[in-house]
Image: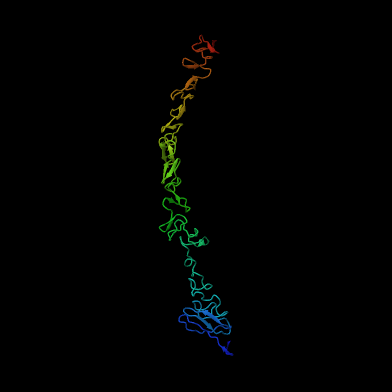
Length: 342
């Protein structure tokens, strides 16, 4: 009760609830809780403020709260529902079915971005702090990004490659050659020239996806593209005249032909050195006999032997050439120490 003094007369007037309805402003009267006091609330809908007469216990409860059915705290302080009860600020909650502190959290019943178990698709906004929410688990700083083969429904957001026809792919002129999700150029890479498994070999370059012989090589006009690279077929003993001809048996390549080097000839068993070869002395057909050595391409008598009548003899013991060529021992004599004697 509140005492009012009018012209010296004390008048006790009961406090009444003045409430405006949520739609047409009509007054509602609702008893307060148990503990005595006065409660006011902002009317919902088109109504204004409302007041209520205190009860015996609890703070005031209002018929309508901010746009909802009951005020913060439910029916009364300490009553059947506490702070954060069934409904609250904003009615059914910001985007969900209940308010902050209620049965569900902000944003609805599921995780961020949709229903239970969903993820953020490539090209959607993200920060590095919530990269794990991305479907790929990767965020490039402002959007979720996908890897090769992943979908990119927003037309961008690929960790590697470009978004082509809704899928992260290597752009034209590149391929994922190492299988690590990284696109490499195949137009000018000698290790992946035109295709992942094409390697340009020795003395070659990759131009527009094709292996070519290096035009800056000396005598570049003689170089031919072979499976293992580019080679000078005029002088390369491993590619003499073409990519497959290999010079053997000591021959070298000269003018695209396998030839024995100077001072040697191929005598049937490969190149032979002729200057001191007793089997091929000066030529393939000239062979020195057992009494001769090959010296400077010629057969000569061995040391202590002399050439007499086309044969090399020891004039110390040869009875036909005893001491000198043509001196023959007679009468049964023999040549000893270059003298005919009995």
